[in-house]
Image (cartoon, rainbow, N blue to C red):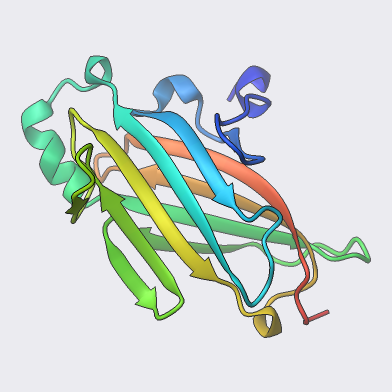
Length: 173
């Protein structure tokens, strides 16, 4: 990725940047990313709204795209640096990029241009990806957390790739 991309902020109220995949290789054009509240508070819900669309100019196989979108995934990578400077081993989770509930405190929802909730992203339209999530402080180390969010189609193409950093007041040391 070029240094230019790694310093390029994602539009909206957030501290996210594009990366680690060059923005030019991302199929999903991000209109904005809203994160509230910022900074995140432990044991309280925070919300994200990512709005964008898939660029027609980047899609050669529109007929196959819907199937690929139905099976898209999001890889979330986490790395924390404790106040002592010690870096904990990175963690990585892969989830389906679709409307889904993980627990009573974690949901992903996808909407189309009309506001209707969809099972997965659709091509040719504006899409909203909404999340609501609560992070229990008792499971989180206090420190600087680096997050990577990489959405990928099963053919290896990337929808979007963003990175952000948050200080989290976890209860674990």
